[in-house]
Image 1: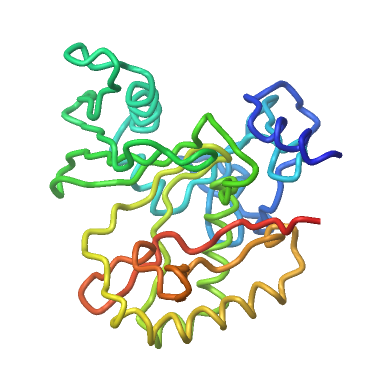
Image 2: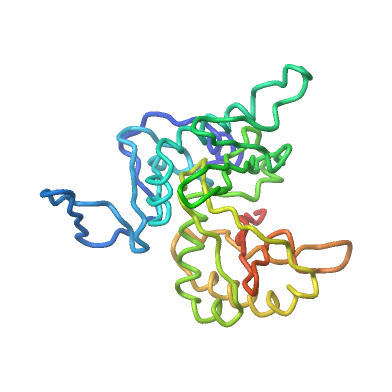
Length: 285
């Protein structure tokens, strides 16, 4: 398939294709759940994520492969959905309104925040996505424990092959869970952890908002100088398609200098959260 065709297909809307497969998810064997007196088979993967698969809808992934549309919900995500009834539809509505609804005071300007039901509120964290990247929002929802904050990301509508470093969010969630599991000792020694993913599909995700500040370059450098090569080597050993063209995202170029990418980390007490751990980069052939 030609690159231009892959690019065009990658951002097509969901379409009917019930024969396309779910990709990258490794299911746990023979997992059953008890619900009242009934016992039923449950689709969970090896990380305990629950998978909800569309009966008919599919989309094209980065490589142009038809992929069954699905939601992956982590155990923390199940608690999140139970705590906030109907919050997925609220987040979907908020993302739509914050993308297309104009401010009546300034007709050329899109609204920056919106009130949802049950006192929930959603606002923009990024004013405008780069081409092909994510639109990012802050979702606030009250519960018995107090005010909870979450990060909502939705794939931007505009795409450019040269600037698109993103991938399906469901892939990113699985990569982070697998990397943190397999390199758990290193993450523990460095006091680093991955973000808490709650819900992810190909085009939409919700994760826990990490309260904290970005570390300084001086604080971050000794950590990423050990973290980056280990994760890079780990990715290089993976043979699953999930890891094709994936690289750790922990450094950036400033002029002719290479410095730690502080925007991708949040400092919480003595822990660093790697909030944006991977980048998709396809080498030009």
